[in-house]
Each structure stands twice: as C-alpha cells, then as structure tokens.
Picture 1 (tube, protein in one colour):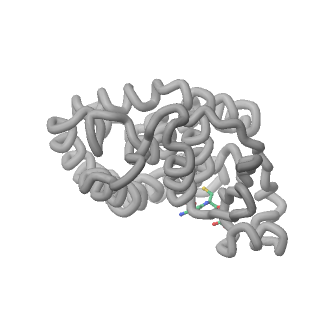
Picture 2 (picture 1 turned 90 degrees about the vertical axis):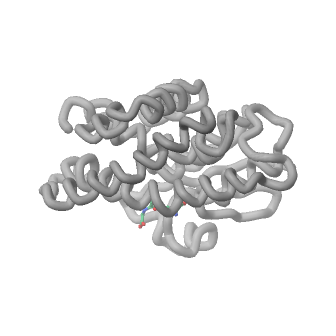
Length: 225
Ligand SMILES: N[C@@H](CCC(=O)N[C@@H](CS)C(=O)NCC(=O)O)C(=O)O
C-alpha cells in the first residue's frame, strides 16, 4: 500500500508512540522531520496533515492520519500479521477497549503534566512549580495503585500479551523514570516489573536511539533532573 511517511520530531512523545508501533510491526517507514523550533507545524503545508498543528502525522496510500493513538490503531489493523500483533485483528476485547482509554484519559494527562513540570520546564529554563509536582504525583500514585491491582490479573494491562495499550505508555514512562517520579513506579512491584519489561523491548530501544541522534539534550537529562 505504498510508503509509510511519519511527519514528526524524535523528541515528541506522541511521535515516539508511532515510531514504536512501526518498529514493533517491523515496517519500513520514512521519517520526515518537522522543524518545530521554527514553527513548521503551524504553517499551511503541515496544517493540511494535522489541522491542530501538532506532531505526529502519518501519510499512507493517499490517507492522512493524525492523533498518535489513531495512527497506531490504524497500523495495527492494517498490518495484523506483521511483527508483534499489538491489537486483535477483528473484534477487540472489552479489556483492551477499557485499558486503552485508561491510558489516554487517566494516565497520560497526569503523566504529561508531570513531564512538563519536571522534565521540560527545566530544559526551557522555566521554574518548576513544586505545588503542581506534589499534586500530580498524588494523582499519578492513585492511577498506579489501580495498575498494580490490574497487573495481578494479567501480565500486561489489557491481557497476557503486550498490546497497543502498554505501548502507548512508553514515551512518558521513559521520561518520568529519569526523574524523582520513578519512585512511584518502583514502589509498586507489579508496576515496576511491567515498566522493566516494556522498556526493554527492542522496538523501544530503537526509538531511544533515534532520540540520541536527533535530540542531544535527552542524553544529559538523567544528569540534570
Ligand atoms: N493527542 C495528540 C497530541 C500531539 C501533541 O501534543 N504533540 C506535541 C508534541 S508531543 C506537539 O505537537 N506540540 C506542539 C503544539 O501543540 O503546538 C497525539 O497523541 O497525537
């Protein structure tokens, strides 16, 4: 069905979700870097790919798709037999549907807020708001308590197999595990084992390698946060 083109940036957590998916699926793709520093993502040409002016965006077989989780679901359904299965080829299970939404609406808003406060603000020379950090750490702790209980029932969040659900967590977990927030993950044995398992996946290692090549500050992050 033609070339898969990913427009994005190696530093973008949302784009990383898509890169991970393509590596899990062992699919070749063309990475089209978007120069976010110069505001390329807000210009007419890019807005035709994603009207919200955000990365990533995917082009495939004449289709233009945005929203990282829509893109990963599309790839998983388009190539069910390639690489890791990631999603059911036909009717998804109720647990897949539930936990996919949990990541997007319970985990990600809290994890992204913490990432902004503790990881990105210092990088941009901005001051961390300690009240926000404490408030959101408490919120994340509650989400992780639910994950700890869930992971007594299955090895991964949706089932005993690694799926899109687990994969969608990787970019923000990667950043938070380089900060004090890692204690929240490490204090919960099942969550901790799950984090170790999913972050060790070869597909994720390939995404990390892209960051080292394309976004130098991430190399030194662990030393400054
Ligand atoms: N829900 C979107 C979020 C995309 C997003 O927030 N992308 C960020 C980079 S990680 C971005 O483009 N930020 C620039 C902006 O919002 O202007 C997705 O999952 O694709």
